[in-house]
Image (cartoon, rainbow, N blue to C red; front, side):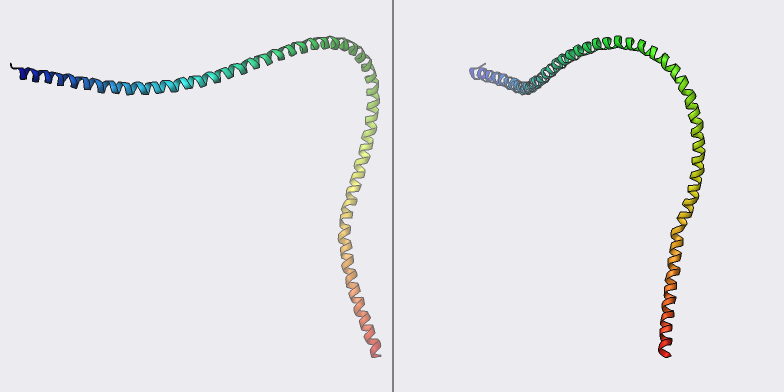
Length: 179
């Protein structure tokens, strides 16, 4: 083998190796592009995580505030319950006193019931009289409703009478002139 052939073989080998390197470089470039895209997505995800973290922190702060308000409300409710217990105690005392008053009022109500029964009888009598009066008023109202029509008819008759009287006056005046 001669020297040129060896160089040629070596060059072919170098060419083959370079083609492999080019192929590897293209593959690496593609991988780098994919890596850059992945990095961009990771950056977006990190940004979204930061935003979500801020929102979560805001929500946690609001929850803390709500819990604090809730504790205050619970303390107020405890105080109100204590007040209610005191009120219930006084209500029980009042109920006992009211029981005594009710017994006295029951007796008085029985007496008043008899008087009310007597009044109811009188009211029923008055109610009957009132119904009779209402019937009479209804009859009068029916007659009162007829009055405007009767007045209208009288007006028409009066208008006719005035017309006839005018004509008669005119005729009398004519007769006087002729005489």
